[in-house]
Image (tube, rainbow, N blue to C red):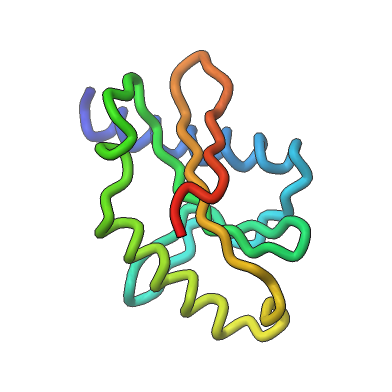
Length: 116
């Protein structure tokens, strides 16, 4: 797959993930949030929980370890901490880290609380 097709597949995956989350009554706060420490694909809220969501588009999955590395998880964790600190009104919310995997012609796989 060319870089352009891969990029478009990733963008489409994020759009699918947002629609999927909205259908499950998540409130989308931010998409593609970036700061000096990293990036978070989707930041959402549901039931007093602030959720950092990483979206991965894959045609095949060999193992979950190849999808999201410890280094990526740590960057996302640091990024959500900056977001959390700047947005005082989320002060009493719990924080959760989810992973959504998008595969062609399949429903999204939503792994809640994938890491902590």
